[in-house]
Image 1: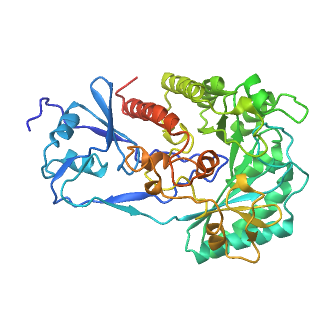
Image 2: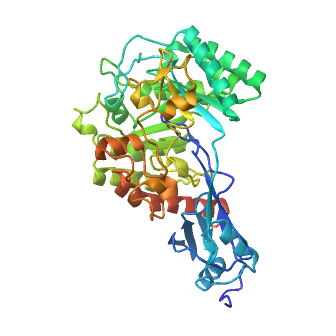
Image 3: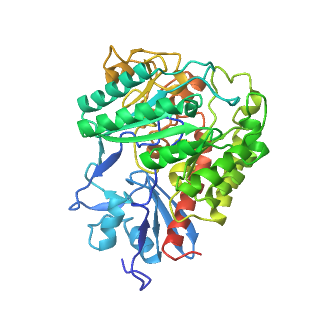
Length: 474
């Protein structure tokens, strides 16, 4: 096919700048990433399992379910070459190999094999305490003064590194959480010091994050975070009154001003850029755009997460997700992002559990993720803290979490997902939420319609960002 333009084919992808953001879940490390085996000697044809939209100035966004990561942007020449593969042909031009690598064209007479890679990381939620100085209406933790002891914490750290060694995993990631974990900062320091020691002894990489509401930050915490390269995740659900309504103190007092003061006066001046986790409910959906703008203004990575109903929040009708309200609120947030596009990719944080990397499972629950309670018991998920499986001292961790009731199935096993062009990104949503609503593990998310309505908009933002990054869109 003769191209109708003299420009060189141009294909933009975001391979190197997709960030992974921390949130209060078993994400974000991509669980069980996939790649595809290709035979370049085969005849290739356009992948029918793809999504396309026209961006601007004749640039096209094209996305394949089989792409290893993110969407691609094609100029007119590259788009025409892509279109030429409506008929089978061999790869013959440099752009052809890029199209094949992104799964936009596929072998026509050869099986396109999916390869699922084993995980490289053991992620552990260390439940430091049940105590918290806030009273968030959607919280699933039964508040009390109980907390992790130094003895149990040390045993847990040791068992986690032994497990990583047994399973030949390269990294241990610790998520210090609660309650408000920083209420026991001295304990976190002791545990992390021991984790560093074991990391060096065993040659296993260590990463860590503290999940916090941001109201108890002090200079000691700031300097320790900076010196030990421990990340911080702050929960921020709105600006001003919107946040205060959803995340008040136990006496109903506001907290946003305190959080923002710590951010601006303590954290940012010392080079600490926390990840921002935004929990979207029907109550704060209209304010998501404001908090996203606030995060971008301060150059902070963020994730937009859906509220999950739990035993402690069942009676709170004002929180329940309502599709029209959620879609409208998040679309407004996307418009705010488009008005001030960052140069780094925010795609991994734009929509609940959706990830840009192709993968088969929503999270690592039951596989390479473990929750250690303050009593040294093992659970599959932090939302199931009361459903423990056994003691970390007496059991092998990976087989133990695999025995739990949560069935974290591959998206290819879920009804309603198998033919969806977005299945390797949302992977059918949170299995716990799906089971709560449907009573089944092997079916698509109850929020499927929200994902399908919003993910094309998220892909469009990534396309516009790529154009901006390459000086093709102001």
